[in-house]
Image 1: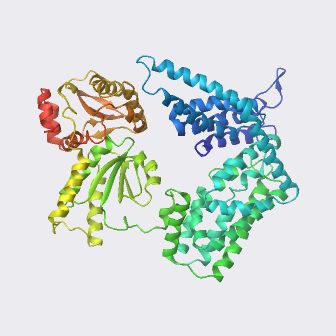
Image 2: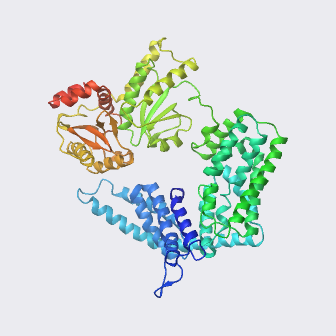
Image 3: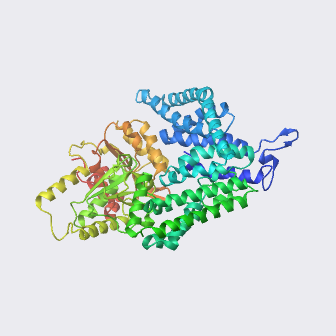
Length: 638
């Protein structure tokens, strides 16, 4: 919840560092001190930390649970906590935001599908307003006092540690937690709220640098540069730059996991850095995220540059010395150990790492490719079209036994060899399929990446002694593969009216992308295939990931969450002879899609075959009757 809003924290920190009374450029009207015409200046610092940042956190948390509606209700609920407490309510926002989204989702489920047509907006708006108001009261009277008591107690603990010189001991917990990927929970969940409170009162806080100090990690990487071996030594210099300047601390975690005893170096460096901050009374005005030295310096308080700089230097030096002793007295590591440590790091993280690829071999897969999945948000439109095109290419290359299926991202499991997604969805698919090779495309119909996948299949088969196109499969295996493909392309029990005559329009009336989606969706509604709310879900899907497929084709369809609004499978086709601007691309054919199970996949497969052939597209463009259009797609309703 906090990480997506770090930019707002940085903005607040810069404003604080510049404009408060002790800042670099004190401005009473901006820094919130003094009076103007006898009225106390409010400034930007106080309102941002009191209202803006907690509300952003709450909205993010609610939206994660229940999209925009959850974010709005979560924000309303958080206002009760903000007003009910006298301190910045980050923890309260992290509670009320998701709580508001989750409870609103449960309430909406009570009357889902039971609202009379025309009353949806009334019910939705009033239910959100009433429930948000009740949660705000709960936050004011119930949650705010509890959170304030917790914050006060935690602040007292920190102050006790500071007063007794024990704060450096927190490194014993913080540094191992970083390697175990609990660093964000500790830093932004506990230290940031407490640090913000200190910063408001004292103008700075060392709590912001307890976890973010890049010194301990830099010292370990420097030790590998001088005393490491093999891939670890070769990659340490590049990792050090990414860590120290880029602020991506996780890049040094595999080096620690490869030699777990190095955690002592990180702890020693962390303790040294914290002790230095305590002695020099130095601190930052706001969180430094990512933990780059540039971010640290940008958020350093005006009187703390010496102390902060010294803490980083000494933390690096101590960490380097301890790590050097460990590396010189222990067993040398080889390339394989580093790659294994990178994989272990991703296992601890629970998702793919953006930097782990620095340590891995460049081979695409660990074995023959047997199972490819094309994933999109709903798993019934874009993915089905892309899977059909890719399936045909792989079969044409002589690998009919390779299964190519399509699925919603939410339904993915980590049992695929290759995962293909639109480039805007890759980040959502990767954490669910960590062991797969990921390929992202920006054009569903004729992406050059499909040819690369075919080459991957061919290379993996040759490397593993797998399928050779020159050596046909046994008949039984071929039969099994054919059965799998039939299942992918759609159920044999598909309805006979997935694509009906009345759902094909040769001269669409729309002139904009939004109107075209409405026109295609209205045809689905008129046939009784979807609820009228499904059209709104088509727009929502378009906003998240465009459905332009290439070759003048777009296939708008609903989100995965809107599947319950589909009554039966149907497809609509609208042609726009003059073309429509579709996010900078020209679209002449808009295909609306609504599918139950796999009943609609055969028609999508037929559409994919047609639009992957430019001659067929030209014939479709010149068709003068609906029958000609239906004939071009073959017996898709059989």
